[in-house]
Length: 392
Figure 1 (cartoon, helix red, strand yellow):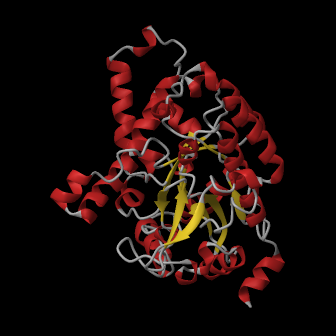
Figure 2 (cartoon, rainbow, N blue to C red):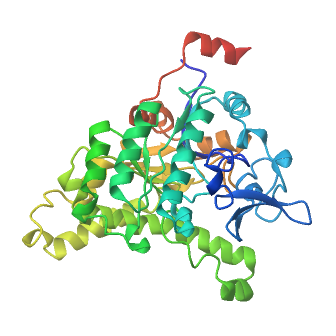
Figure 3 (cartoon, rainbow, N blue to C red):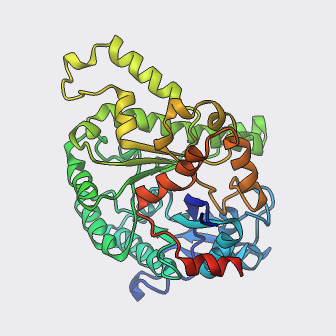
């Protein structure tokens, strides 16, 4: 039996300070995301004349939290931004592979819309995808890139998928709410070329939490009334539950009916809400006699989920013990969200796994922690030499 027991399907890589400035043409350098340092020594990602966020805020694992985050890269866990350090950390925890998502561009590339220039927007996405490929080359079997998209242009998005797939990318990152950016709804035939290339290349499509419009962000009135961290807690849970709305939209859109082999992943949203959402969809589907005007929906909503959708859990303890059969053990993946503020880090990884899955049969545990992710992302398993190296 392998000493590696986990395939982690949602982590983030803290982008290096010169990611864009060192790669775009000289005429674009002043416009792309770059790092500035304030008078207190704290670094910030800046786009144009506006701060996006501090890089340390997305790299608190083992060194800070939402109130006290690293001021600069030297204060972060090195595995946040250094691929070799990430692999060492993975070895320590028995994690064989990690799927990687962005920070600066947003969880659906929506931040690049602020640039306003289509050429610049596309360049920033392509530069990020190239950099992520380079980062993963430290061990491309274990570090698994997901293609970010210029989703505002479906033709360019399809070309980017086709460009990145041969470079070893394992999935597609897409916004679950294209309509919030003035784009067609998920069910609009406009998106068919994207769904078709995903099926052709057998790449799952990720709806990462926070991929829709984040314009409201942390509301000032709630911060003033509730306190900053209480308001942020509420916002965090709201973002998780919005994936439930996106899932309902996807199921009723007809996309899954038209493309029976397509795969979607609800990333970083948890799984405990899924049984209620599916039961509610099935109930309303029957009660509203949907098939009378939508004969294309030949399966029940819950059946489309079982056939086409995966979801990820990390902190939950109730759902893994009580609701696995209601979600479906073949549809659940495990993540740590490293190195984000709410990620599982170090000893907490096994503690949460043990607390949630201790009552499961080993075959179920193996599916959730390993086999489902291995199949979905076509992960190359460790060799005898890999096992021996870990034991040293």
